[in-house]
Image: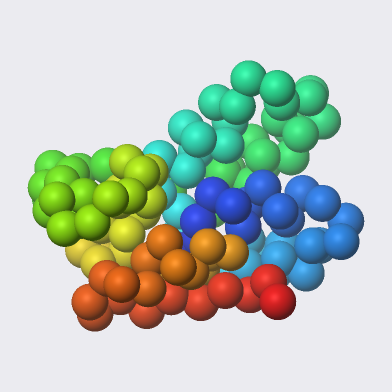
Length: 121
């Protein structure tokens, strides 16, 4: 199973990255609640983008931010400088034993026992 990073969701809205939508249709894939906040919370969303992203989050399995995830995210941030969002997504993947699907694999590839895949080449 996999957790989809926010950037994959954002890129999937663009025609040239439409192939990423397959990741969003797969029932084996999940997303962190943080990604929902990050993507839908962007202040410059156009109504059509908002509608697309809302439909994505409606169809995906959303994993809530739990105390164990928060503790693991803190641990990750103490090891290396990273954003709070990346630490939450990485922690969610580790706690759930999921692979991370992201364009920014370098943000995660240092994390021991975490599988990372970049589908954008």
